[in-house]
Length: 397
Ligand code: AMP
Ligand code: MG
Image (cartoon, rainbow, N blue to C red; front, side, top):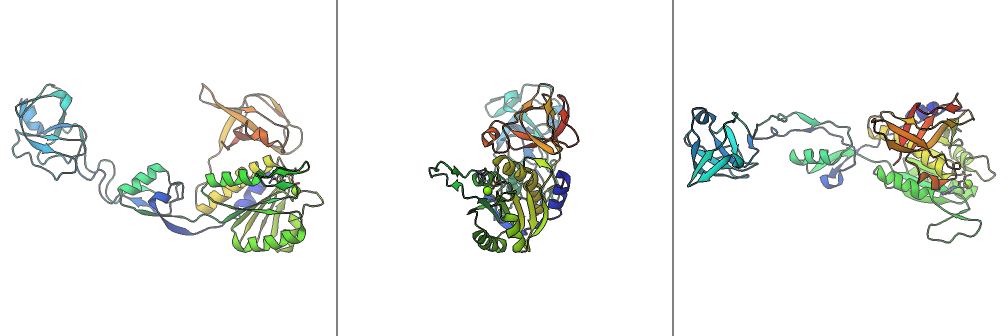
């Protein structure tokens, strides 16, 4: 059977690229940047006053002068004034250009102002104090943000300050989330005794929305002809399909055969893991197909563990750095499968992330997902997992 590592590798060998597009700055948060952002001028672009007070020439202070006639007010947003004589001062406001010939700023808190004279009350004054020097943060032309990062409010601020009203970003894939099964009814309906409401599509839609993707939601009854007809259309339209259900051993689990008939190449079927063992993965001419088992915990785990890295790679993001947590309690798991244990995380006083098992009642127990925060990946070849041991972590909350 395909191992978790092999499945991961195969999936990452089948990434797609989606191209790039320009979006207005207001829509760029959360998207993947596809251009470098360089400083269009020095940061800051002029010697910037960083305290409200007066600007003087240090030379005069050093020579013993403490009282300075005020020649004017240098406001933020006003063109640069001149000191006119080295014994004068200008009142200056935070964000203003430092007046010409001045080189030191004294805060109002350290002054007394009377009759047009500012008197300095302190002796500890350093040349160029309270000045944010031109180009000290970044030089004109310097790349501040490199292409390939996920845009956050911090990058939005940089883009705005270098005059980018729009940004080149990676196009997001077109994705359909498809539920399957005759037992499923819509959220707004009252299920008959033998029916249940669909939950997977909504969990996955919300998960993908968190990654910026607005997926289309579709449903397939367990009907071979209908399945093939709908999937034929989907394979023309979407970069990725995420299906839930219909890939196990049941009499109505038609998906693997249907994909075969439609020319989608099976790259693996069944992964040595729990939950999510019946996972089927394949590739059509345009489309990559993640056909996940219908049990809600399987669908959810596989989307985080497999679809997310596939998406990141396609968008040109660096792979996630592995995260780890310490098991807080002994745990026993017998089958020779990788076990994705649901855990509740604690940030311990010693700075370590601790993981408390909240195993739940199996892959159908979707209520348990609301109790946990993450999956801890427990490897094969071992049955006793001891308190204090460290394992890889996939956080979903
Ligand atoms: P299957 O993989 O089709 O055999 O489905 C496995 C289990 O998951 C069954 O109990 C289904 O009723 C359930 N299931 C399948 N799809 C969904 C869905 N979209 N939402 C909630 N449960 C589902
Ligand atoms: Mg089914």
